[in-house]
Image (cartoon, rainbow, N blue to C red):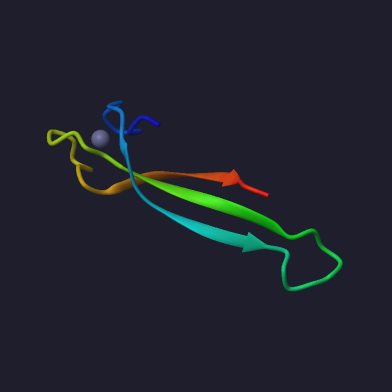
Amino acid sequence: MLCPYCNIVTRIEKQRVEVEGDQSPDTETKVYRILSFVCRNPRCEHHGEEVGETKVQIN
Ligand SMILES: [Zn+2]
């Protein structure tokens, strides 16, 4: 994705896995991978900060 502040392509800083719906047998369990994006433009005021994340369902 692009940094929303400077529109330079960001890099993926970390990923984590999130599970939804596993507390109740009535709901479908969904597993997501959350990707966090960090701005890599040294001239952006949000350089090195997390500027967004994307949620991708993996099951
Ligand atoms: Zn930026």
